[in-house]
Length: 195
Image (cartoon, rainbow, N blue to C red):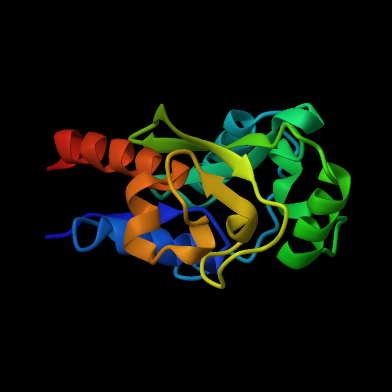
């Protein structure tokens, strides 16, 4: 029997990506599946803190074993911004396109375009808390390339590749991405403790 576990996210792109990576190893439930309509305030100063806030909220209020992630883009020339504010970089009611516009304007013709994507998963299972990290380095392109992916994918060129995340198919991206790497660690761990 496939073990059910909640992924504490409202981001349908993240949910789809996770389900593709996990396959039939586990059944990933969404917040909608457990009728969670609460707004979980992510007011931590690090990815780890925000991931823990989300996972703890679901465990404490709904009782499910669960995991949550916080992910973002850190750009060297911007002192690590947008960081934990990646999803709302251009303001509270922004979208990915506005976030990218702001990023490209701030970067301008800057020569140092080094950046990295970071993911931190927090897993709470049987009242124990575990963390799993994933990271990929790359550079920020001067303009968008590709129409796949989501978030900043169209302007992120992973180190050692000539295609942006948005130019890759989902299996190519999931193999090397920050979330893909962290997810593999999470799945491997889950398999060791719940079979």
